[in-house]
Length: 248
Length: 85
Image (tube, rainbow over all chains, first blue to last red):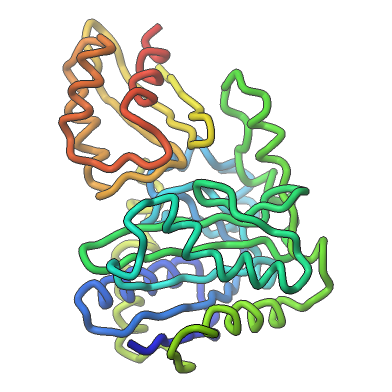
């Protein structure tokens, strides 16, 4: 089993999610080796969790005004805000039998390379259950997973240099009438990798790859024509459609 | 009607429901995970037509073979009970 490391490819939000579904299914059918893929986006976008309500979580007016691309993930979890070059997102496509059965354990395990790499760079990151990459000054990133019969998709997004004010304008964070005031302030506590170190986004990605591959057999790779074609169809059918993205 | 539950060290579960003697139009949403995903709809359908009785609701939700991640059947029912209050 040789890991394919894909570190290039700039696409729309919809295309990234389509690629995730194509590769996860391919691995589930045992038609590929596991892979790690870094995302590069070409526009501002918001991936929302599979089970979230579009109306409830997003400021529709702001999003439409600024032409922000909203895509529903196939994984659960919360809404994230992303701008080109300002976040670091990766997807891990891994056989299920290589992943811990316990959910909490598996999230921690799969992102431990990232936490270690950040620590090595000088970012004092740590993992907080269920699926958060935390810093003493706030949340750095989060992960989401879906498990198929034979494969697991685990993808993670971290803020590199995100415009937090814009994020708070686009996402209806903390507007839920919940009695626990601690939530509101916690969710507004977001920090970024660039707040703590001066490494470029590319350098951080290189470091993540080095850490990830240090104990594995791997090769640098890219998406095949077939995979890209299948993903493009899936954008038409699903991730580019209002039906899927706004269904709740 | 809306009810919600923020699970300690977990996720936020929100329920939208119509209630007129029994529960109708149940929509469960939030930043949690359900494996496999299609079970969430099955849970919604199982609840529809039932009266908002705590123990009975918990039993019914537990009958669906789903892995709830970030919340429990009890948390879900707490949110439902809040909605119909």
